[in-house]
Amino acid sequence: MKVKTEELKSVIKVLLPATSKKDLVLQMAHLVFQENEILAYNDRIAIAHPFESGITASVPAESLNKILDGIEDKEIELSADDNNLTITSKSTEAVIQIETEYRVVEEYFSEVDFDAMEWGDVPQDFLDNMALARLSTSSNALDPNNLYCVYVNKECLDSSDGYRVSRIFMESDFEDSFLLPSSSIQDLLTFKSFESYSLEDSWIHFTTDNEVTVSCRTGAGDFPDFTEIIDGFEKESEIKIDTKLIPALENLSGLVEGESDFMKSVNIELKAKKAIITGRKEGVSVKKSYDVENSGTATFDISPVFLAYILKLTNNMAIGEHSALFEDNDKFIHLVQLPV
Image: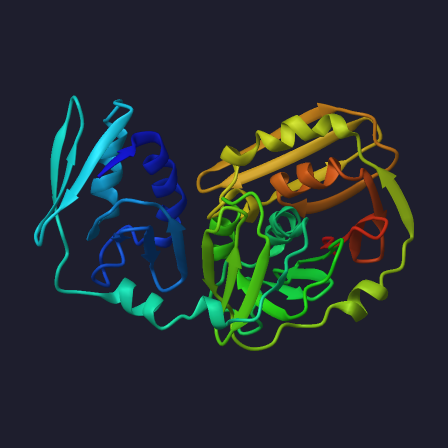
């Protein structure tokens, strides 16, 4: 069957987050073609994407992606027998061996009945707010309090790494509460929006406007209630941070250690006419000074990427006895611990 090359490339790009880079569990690094859709599953994320291919085959995602990247022809022809998938275009003929023994991906989807599920609406600003909430999660996937997750608490998103606390309010509510691991949120953020969701056992399922189904394994257990900490904040002073710092903060990622940009932290010393930012990583310490106009003084540690994000929303920072608070009316609250 002939298909448009760019269309298949774009579909595979959507599916790749649900594949494993290494086939530690056989077939989880594969894409499964099923005539009118393509499936991917890695025990953490599962994606079913409509696509008319006319074939049934399980092939290594990485190999297929590399072959397609090298094809510039507008159309390709896909054909499959019991052993191989053949890709043919004007300039290319490629053969990929089909996985015939293991059926892990198919088994997962065969046990999920999307039509029988009850579906609710997803707030339109869910993913935008999730991108902000994720910045306060812990990198410790074994955290006993599930701080490596964002807690979707119906009307708001709560997150914390033990030093920061974020609460972000959505424009509408979920009907359910659930935990989303930060590692999976990164993959969910590759989508523009979700239209509906269904919560079932240890999975949450989302649908998009083009009928893609995205499933994500949820966290198990409880999440701390930070309401008392948030409500207990008492402002002693307030600082307006110069937003001219934003470009500098966005470019500081390479100066500090961390598994990802949002887990990296710098020390910021604010003065009336200056901001001094210190970043450290193994064997290296860099201190940079910026001429800015702040309305007060403070010293604190924070993710530079996170602060840049916050300053685009508000540059008001309230100072308490041991913490600082960023707040934008009823949209979000963020507390960061100050050095004692």
